[in-house]
Image (cartoon, rainbow, N blue to C red; front, top):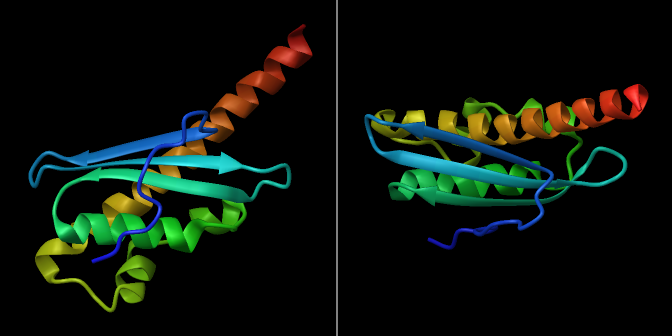
Length: 122
């Protein structure tokens, strides 16, 4: 009823997108990472049903302040449990939220790795 962390981070360190063509849900997660590999900000934009928005909000709340490795451990079951359960036909939403967050972290790590490699080559 009151989603938190809705929006976009203009200069995001990582962006993760997922979608489910069957139900039409689309989620984009934006992350900011501080110097000790902690998520200092997490925002999302979700196009989908109420369950998809609730999942996105919960994932963003669960991830905030965690290290990248801790955030990668957030599972769809964790999300569903924190929401007090989801109807069977909406469980895929919890999967999408965790996947979008994980994709943002993977994109951040890929960009950082490429930057470090470029530094070594220069």
